[in-house]
Image (cartoon, helix red, strand yellow):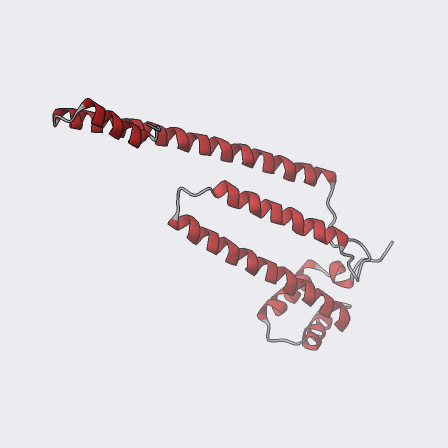
Length: 184
């Protein structure tokens, strides 16, 4: 069994200082290591450097996620009737793919897979995807039903107005069929 990384054993208050220094971005690894040692932490420059790399990777993933979310939010804003369920399903698929990739990568520091996924989490993800797909289908069916009702109402209104105006029954029927999308 491999030993725990030195950063993982830090006091939470010191770890918070480390995170703040990394977020600040103005300090070198050597300067950060010195500040942590001044607080009583027993850390090496290499352990701080490895933690910094992971910190940057997580930050990069978060920024990418925000950018993707912003693009989809803009798209959904333009098409509010769009299928949000598909977007969320695709995000879940991407998440599952990323986790699967992480399962195949070994962490240099611990010798363990970068991601550990228990069967319960896999089941929960599958269940969430199933429920989302079901909700998407229900939403789609509801939207189709609403559209059909709206078209039927429009056809009735056109029928009334056209009949009042003296339009022939055959022409009224043709217009009605066109509105309802019924082939002649």
